[in-house]
Length: 383
Image: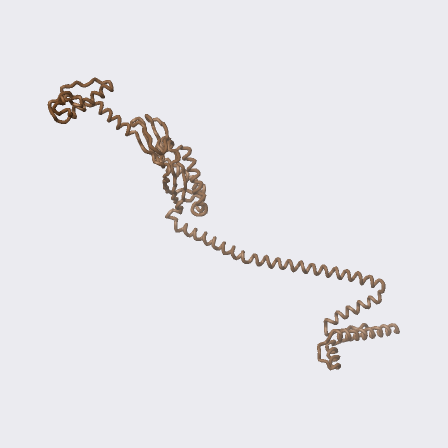
């Protein structure tokens, strides 16, 4: 039977003793009993049944401590993302660097600073700088960087961003100061950016900033506004120079191969002429040597034959012959072409004079000349 039914002796299952009322159990009494058990557990003095306060119980300090302990424990948990690292300081001194995941550190004892390790950030700097040739140039530079060492970024430098900006200005001024104005503006822009990146990284490593430079871009470089018009004229003049050089090079590329071909052709023709002349000379020398052998065996006959061959060669190339007879005052004129025409008309042939006809006429002329020469010699001998 139920404890509050007739015959149940009015026994309270919560240990409250005999109760005169039939209502539900008293919550204050339950809390008081729980407090007594906790006080006994932590070595405290059990609370009396009546301490002069309403309800007869003391303030639940142990419960408050438990709640505070739970809150303190939960407060120490923190989450580090995959792109982050956390620098832990314990009582103001570096303790460790933790990666991504769920971590716990005692609050108010450890100080946790989270930094993003993968975010690429951009720093921009501008200014007027002096070049190597004592010219002033306006430069705009962008630096893309990320955090490489979380401990150095948080602890080694008081203001990493300010250190980055000052190091960028110093590196850029040093590199621009070693270049000419034309080199910074047009010719060596990529080299200026590369040298600036290398020098900037050296400065940041020296300062232990924990920053890694990814890219340095020289976005703009131009002369000051006051001299921009004059500088534009200089730029246009340089562009015209380059254009004319390219046109001249294109013309040279067209002319030089043709000239080289003509020179090679002339060289080959000269080599062919040389070979022909040398071989002809060798042939003539060989023929002369053979003729010399014949001449030594029969000088008169050979001399006569050489004379006749020479006269034939000469007369075969001309249509008119002038003969100067030794001892005579008049010069004989022989119109070979007319003689050839007369010989052809006598034969009733209106064809072109053949070499045989010319040879025949030449032989007649030679015989006549020979007869006249002999007669002249005889007349002299008689005298």
